[in-house]
Amino acid sequence: MKILKIILIVIAILVVAGLGIAMMQPAEGSIESSIVINASPESIYEEAVNIKKLDAWSPWYKIEPSAYSYEGPEEGVGATSKWDSENPDLRKGSITIIEVIPNELVKTEMKFDGMDANFGSWVKIEQDGDNSKVTWGYNYSDLGLFWRFLFGLGDMNAEMLPKFEQGLNDLKQIVESKPTPEPEIMEEEMAADSLAIEE
Image (cartoon, rainbow, N blue to C red; front, side, top):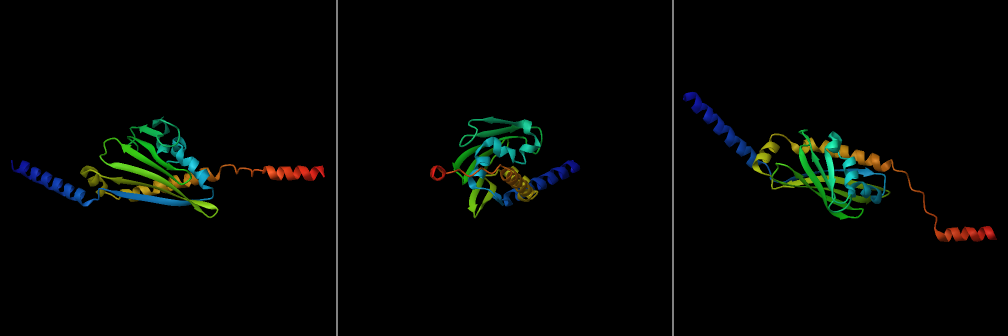
């Protein structure tokens, strides 16, 4: 009986300590990373507004591409990517594009099975001289006590930041390796050249 009493006291202390850790953690937070890409906003936007192209530079997609499936349109609002995996780094969830501003912003809503919280992410594109600055970030809110406790056991943002940096570097490689479009010849210039030849 004495041993059982001690065990119950220890469990009670651990539970109280766990609740204390959870209560000390914020129920909301965010993280973001930026990179400068030698390309136009239009070229980068193409890789973010299309859900399959968005997955192509996502570090999580590379873990298990076969776990992914798609619903809705391929690009724009409503485009949805879903995954279902036994891998603990993926598990089960989805990401849906919920807002777009052409060549400027793509916002998504993320859902993870078993997680009682709201998650969102965004890709923001800004002209930066001849280049473009791209910011990729995510945020969460209304995080439940259990997940606040788990988040409190480690620095989740610090763990995720390298993933965002990797994804942005992969995006940069994809965009900057695109063929450079040939400049269009204006009709007026063509007409002027024709007249010059005739003369």
